[in-house]
Amino acid sequence: MATVKVSEAEKVYILHGIRDDLRVDGRSCEDYRHMEVETDVVSNTDGSARVSLGHTAVLVGVKAEIGKPRPLVPDEGYLEFFVDCSANATPEFEGRGGEELGIELSNTLYRVFNNKNSVDLKGLCISAGEHCWVLYVDVLLLQCDGNLYDAISVAIKAALFNTKIPRVHMSSDDEGGKEVELSDDPFDCVRLSVENVPCIVTLCKVGHRHVVDATLQEKACSVASLIIAVTHRGTVTCVKKVGGGSLDPESIFEMTEVRVDDLSTTLTFQNKVNGLLFVQAGKRVGKALHAPLMKLLQQEESLGKKREKVGFLG
Image (cartoon, rainbow, N blue to C red):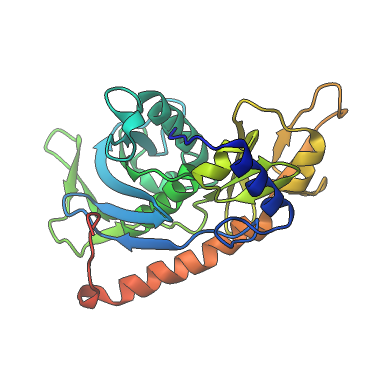
């Protein structure tokens, strides 16, 4: 991932500001930078979106193709993720510099989105055990200024909202076999329900506090981060700790809202906590992100052909 060098004096300045809930750019610890979302920016995809978060820019394209269901879940479709770290985003991605990061991001996105709690996978099934829709989600990092996970998750949700899948008609041939026919009418399509598609919230531990949407400078002062995928109802679909440092139980309690009676994800702390801690993550930040995003997407779609397109190079 892209990194910057920060002097000791700069670190002290950043740490003291975060301690007082005042970051270098004027935000509080749980504020996002300015975010722009635009859909339908790539013509040769079934759905696409561009998201800029501060100086981080992400482009996502979705292609729907007919494939064969997986043996263990014959009545479900699935998603495949590929992340391309463009050398234009940062010089560190030149050559194969971004390959390891791309694989790490792809694996995390698969865990977050490719499950029945996030996407209606059964709705992607055409014929159980024979045909299903496979959604290939391609992510391109255009600019990198920190907080990639959050920006990518918003872009994926927007692209899935924009995705139009051709309606399928099943027919039988002379030998009794099944044939798949796709509608040629571009308006005869099926839309995905993105209501439960989660957004990722990355919480970085800086000093004794946590910050949302950390910049590269703040990331350089962070010891570790917690990635939390939250649906619009506050349900947690994935929790992952990244970074070389450690997080003590008190940090987890501070970075998440813990309710022992209503949680779906478990974390275990050896020698510190007996049993399991059932963690339901950051409802304040995660839930607050969904409502304005969906409102923005619906408003943009309601404009139809009247809306002004900027494009991912805009």
